[in-house]
Amino acid sequence: MALLPILCYPDPRLHKVAKPVTVFDERLQQRVADMFETMYDAKGIGLAATQVDFHERLIVIDVSEDRDQPLVLINPEITWASEEHHVGDEGCLSVPGIYDGVERSAAVRVKAQDAQGQSREISAEGLLAVCIQHEMDHLLGKVFVEYLSPLKRNRIKTKMLKLQREAR
Ligand code: ZN
Image (cartoon, rainbow, N blue to C red):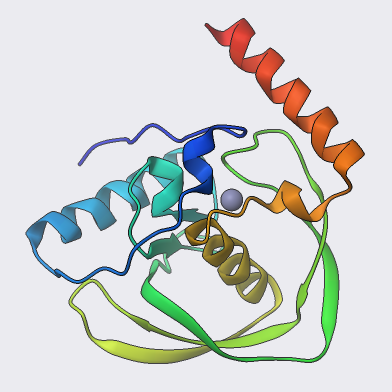
């Protein structure tokens, strides 16, 4: 197991589009284990492969209070999304310290494979639905701040660059 470095916005690698996972081997199982370790260590509820500079369609999620309900979604596809939308505050491990409202479908159904390549469909609402949509955006190279106004986004970009300079 290993902690993976998380890319920070506005790193251009966060805008790469992930390719489908085609090989379900030991390397992939290791990647999944490392992503869970990294996500739990950072106290996040979801992590997309894109955020750890691995550009395949893989996300790990755990929205449970006790951090004991790991969910792996490989090659996820939304098969249904509710017409009802909600606006909720979101944060992101790649944009530390920033939280802002994003409008998302209140419920979704998603078809995905697990780490062994088994396909299944799950229904999600509430926080899990939000998290799935947020992480799936990462696989398309989209960070949640792109839903915000250009003014807010620029302010966040400046703040992040300043933090990164100070951390060096
Ligand atoms: Zn994120």
